[in-house]
Image (tube, rainbow, N blue to C red; front, side):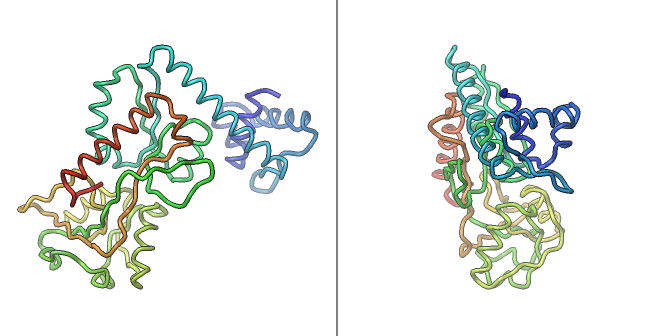
Length: 305
């Protein structure tokens, strides 16, 4: 049994496919199968159940997968920390972000961090889902993930950084543009631009509105909040979006942002595998983002992120 056997086995369990892992690793499906067979010979039990559309771990396989993933992640973290201790100022920080995260939540912190830690390599990765971020944190391929906070996730720590109030974005010539605020009931018959499908922010918005018996009708769908704002500004439609930090609203501009105070704010922040086990460079970046966001919220309470 080798570390590579365990790495491949964990990858197969998560992908549910030998061929998918083979493509990812650039090897043959037979080579991937050999890793699994070696583990099965040494443990004396079947670890995978073959099905028409892939494979799933057996009960024994699930036990081994959980232990192997924990061990691999811990070993990877320890190796990174040992490297970081060599001089204390170098290393890697790998951050999962959405399409608008760096611009609205991290720009000031990023500039300050690069000045203070020029030897640290920051990597920003777009992950398609919160589940994908959690898996990457658990197996040690990510250090930090900026997420919409949700229910507890086993093996993951979530830290709230700020709450985002909701705003109705409309063009300046829209009949609703002059309102000081909008009640949720006023949105009952309003067609909206749909937030990213299957995203935590969209689910949070739908759940908040459901408390008032309101379900939205949608026209256009978008991949991120910035695109929803752009389409609203262009007059393509209306959008309910979080009040993003740094989002200005000039009096003579084409976009109007109207508060929807009855909706529960959207909680966002960091997800990590273990906060107290972050490498020094990763902890420094996470703390700096928290500090910068706190300053922004204090300076502009109506435009919190």
